Length: 284
Image 1 (spheres, one colour):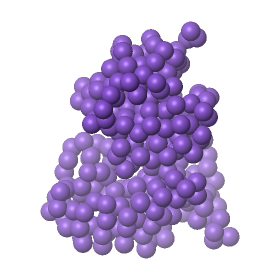
Image 2 (cartoon, one colour):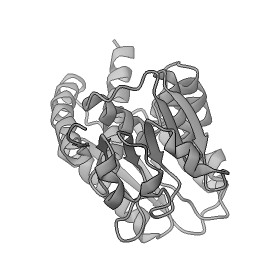
Image 3 (cartoon, helix red, strand yellow):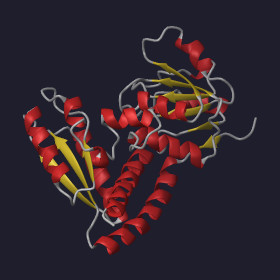
Image 4 (cartoon, one colour):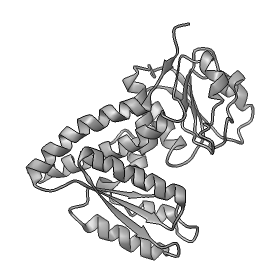
């Protein structure tokens, strides 16, 4: 078997950021205004605060501004909707990111869906998902869209391959399955309650671990030569696939950390730049 490919998301993310910095500079010069990504954080969850900070740092690296909106833990659905409306109506804001999860009293889906399609750079709205699934234009959900960029960069062939996606979340498993289907893969969507999961995974040319359980996908389930996409990040920097024992059987894999995670942020920034460019074209 050929040497296993390590799909380095960290390296590719740096390359994407370098190319984005040039596009941002050009657009800033053309419009006379900085590009702005608005991030909304509700409450004081330390992990969410870290993710928001990382996204702000990525904005800075490419020459964009980030507007950080921090709302208190007790914020209501109505209060969050009002904030989203304010950002939707602000012509200087090019993208809006609502950090998941929000406190339990908030209707998260309702709030996600309030984000304007042209500012939904994280790809979280039902409308965006539906358009993407139908092959129409929309910004893809950032993590699966980043995975697709990684697969393309490493020239992983998808057409006709059997892909098994383990996970069904609305911002990862489901859009991942649709993106692979749109690229002519044959897709099986599984989850933690799927019967005979091991047999289904053993039949896969490409496995996506997106279930949120550490080393849930066992190494002896992996078909020799399969491509492994580990989108999990559990405590201790452990993914959803037992990569330690599965890498040697694979033809390509994403490391944890340094695989899918950096691509999520790079894709978010990429789609914000694209949103600003689209807006600039409209104003011509």
